[in-house]
Length: 225
Image 1 (cartoon, rainbow, N blue to C red):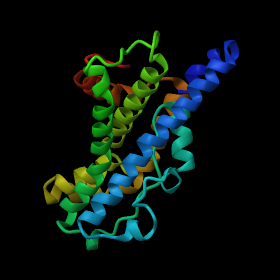
Image 2 (image 1 turned 180 degrees about the vertical axis):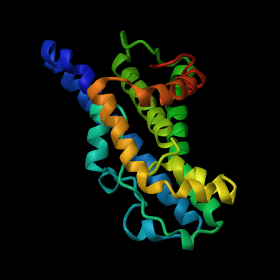
Image 3 (image 1 turned 45 degrees about the vertical axis):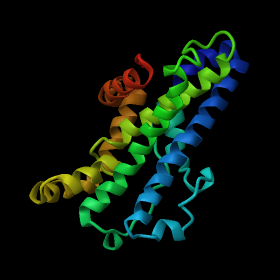
Image 4 (image 1 turned 90 degrees about the vertical axis):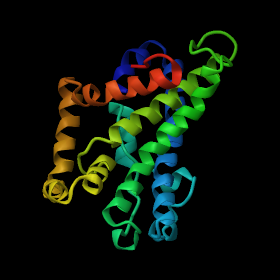
């Protein structure tokens, strides 16, 4: 996202700084809700590991991952600090782990839906001009960030949530086959991100963009990307 704002940084640094601060605030909301929900789901299913480590908290400091936050700012996608979960303590076995993993993306969609209510109700316009324009712009940004976090994290590639959701819900033989490629997931993900940044192919955006736009049309009545 920062890469797309270089021209504005040069032409209007004040506006760029304001947008950057708004983006940081939106990230704090999205990532905090996401990781807190993982911890809450784990605790609800019997594993208090995250709670003991201070992750059952709405304090952003407990959940921010430096590299993941930087990547979200620079490239438009990223992650929070992984919530520690002990699968042996969870009720429901691998399905319980799938529920814990799914809780984060679902919480982001719910957050986006709640913040979209003023727009659907006609209380705020989606244009940034006129009265309430600053508030509308910020709420729209939070909605978009939450939808991006949800869609990105549901990609079935380790270490993203979608991988553990797939392992937990697929038939056992297919889940075992998928689990064998888990060590290669971070490498593949990093390579795709680097190719997108350096070559501008937009591979990840082609994957998550349609999901984000579809959700935005439901919540806001129009796409956002």
